[in-house]
Image (tube, rainbow, N blue to C red; front, side, top):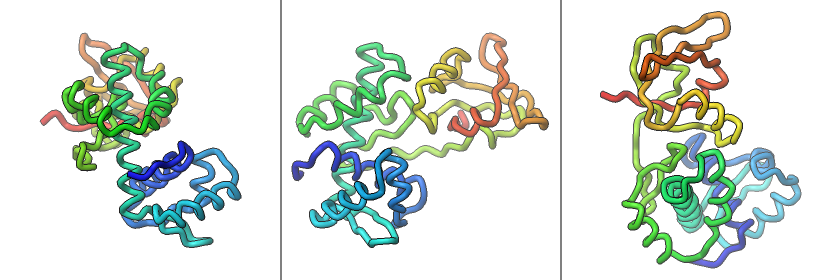
Length: 224
């Protein structure tokens, strides 16, 4: 695998995640990429030209960008490193899930495939990180699980929390306080029409009310 800078790896990872959130083979708009990476449109254009020259992306000026097979492989490996480090930080170093994202983003740029494979083996080959995001295996394959937004769950349906769509620390701390953690089984007791909020039942007869901005950022799956 070719040696890239931290910034180059961040660009490839960002393009992959943006494409994955839309549809396969779509083009990522440069303005969207600029907003995601919190940088100027001019800086984005300059970097895309460099990555295009290295045959890591397909860049069409004024239209957008997607990844070549080589660029996709690097992006997936970077994601694999980040999510394995997040899992390690939470399960072995006892970091809370709201603190690991930025630390793991630094560790993901360590350039050692041997280290990552040994880390994966040591952790028991986990399939999902502490936020419920899938961890690609050594072949670059992501585990598949059918999920839906909590906001789409019907009344009296029982579901298990699978993941979150934002890693915002304040949001994760809020879920912590409510006990809405990955792996928690919940039941929808009521939907409140006024603001689309939900009355959620947890174990030990605990009930909480959360609004649509929260339920739109939680992924769940059926325990059946």
